[in-house]
Image (cartoon, rainbow, N blue to C red):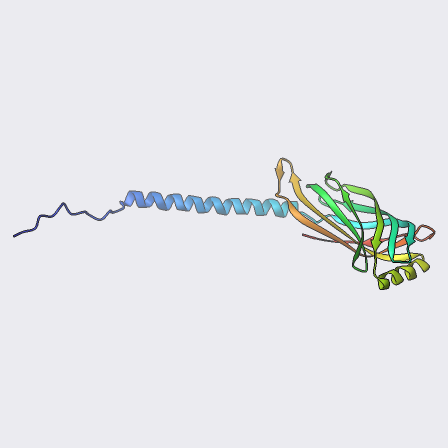
Length: 203
């Protein structure tokens, strides 16, 4: 006896017109992606964005006291210079965290609030930070006392911030920046010498 069967299904076949449409859409999307990438690259190369430049121009340590049980009290007055070397781009900063270190020990902290740096603008910051009852090891205390005898001390200054670039109405995403000012020579208040130090910037 013959078995009853339903109507057989035919495999779906993409017609030549539909296949051509799909290939055209894919080709246009790829071309758009490539053109967008090339446009961004051309703009980026024409702008030639540069990292901001930082350095310590001057400063001093005042009200210095180191107790017998190795607790440090002092105030630091540092002049920090920031230069936006870009000819076309502005820089928008979130707050900047500051640390002063002596022999890898953090002795003072501070903050610079959010700010906007115009193209080719030089900006000067006077940093007033304080060591208040900072406990040091016996060895670090001895090294600091020897530095006081020479009227100058070598410090490290670290800056951390989030910033983005601005060109016209276009703004980049926020990205992290770290500025390291190593071996900054800072004078004690009774010294006639000038404090100074260069910095490196990394993202």
